[in-house]
Image (tube, rainbow, N blue to C red):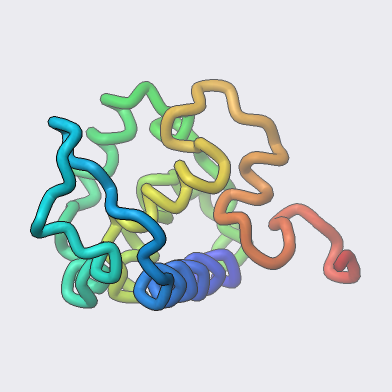
Length: 143
């Protein structure tokens, strides 16, 4: 549950930083010209960020499998229930519980530790999956 809260807090912080960042440069379109409709101050709308229904559990599983992601087969024991949970279940449940777009969570996992496309992640990658606060496998007293 703590990990899910970390994901939500980080996603909110990322959205906040993105929306208040000054536009230092225009991003060119594919053809090399600046897209006149591009607004660097509006990367994602609140509606997109909080749309938890963009991907189903099955969509997330298929996406991870298509990317040959280690997350496609990743399981961990849920400390609250003692039962195995897949990465797909964790991502889907977090998106539903915290009303955050599962695509945002997938981007976060890729951005921080390359977990979507990394076929051989280390324990460190999993421990710092979202890059926030304290690693999941660290002692409670670690900074």
